[in-house]
Image 1 (cartoon, rainbow, N blue to C red):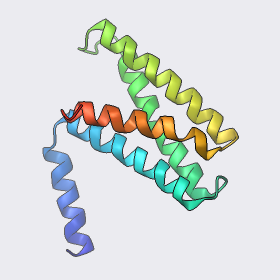
Image 2: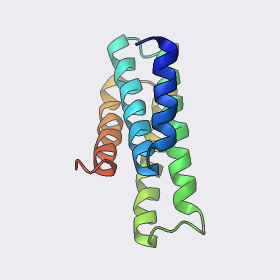
Image 3: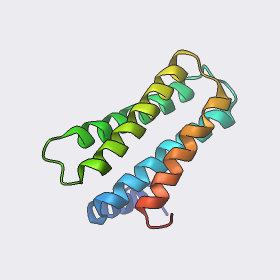
Image 4: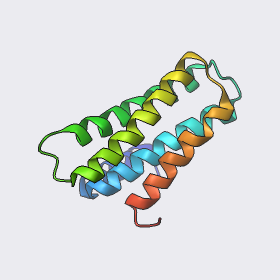
Length: 122
């Protein structure tokens, strides 16, 4: 498949996917970026920093949405999302200051497990 065809397919898939599917795909993308950074074997590489920044931005969005007053989710669900978000954000920030690959695994697993739950594969 050509690059432009793949890009067009990805755009259509994103516009027709449910919000849960988009969230799941984005969590998997973050997990894959973190895994690729580990595979790169350079904790200070630009790839590692970009993977951590992507994860941080994603979880900042989740936290912001969980705290939004007009969020339709029940308060207990929103609180659980906020708690996980705060944990992930603190771990990601710590890794940005001092990247240690053995500490990436929990973030990768959290992203993958929540993606699986959103996709109905939990």
